[in-house]
Image 1 (tube, rainbow, N blue to C red):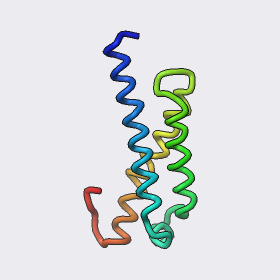
Image 2: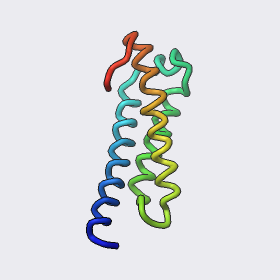
Image 3: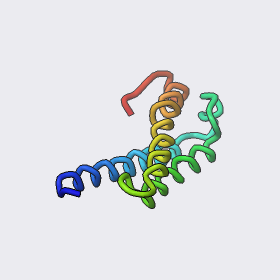
Length: 99
C-alpha cells in the first residue's frame, strides 16, 4: 500500500474509534430514565453497544481481514450518534443542540 493510502486508512481507522468513544462517553453521562422516556433501549444496553463497538474498532482495522467487524461497530456507534443522542437531548432539554 502506498504511504499516502496508508495515512488515509489510518485517519479513517482512528476517526471511527473517536466516534465510538464519544458515543460511549455520551451514553455514560446521560440519565437512565431519559433512555426510557425517549423510547429507546436502556442505558446499560447502549453502554454495552457503544463500549463494545469502540473495543471492536480498536481490535480490528478498517483495512484488513476484520474490516466487516470494524464496519459493524462503526454502524452501531453512528446509530447512537444519529438516532439516540438527539432524542435524549430532546427529552432532557426540550430541544436540539449541536452536541
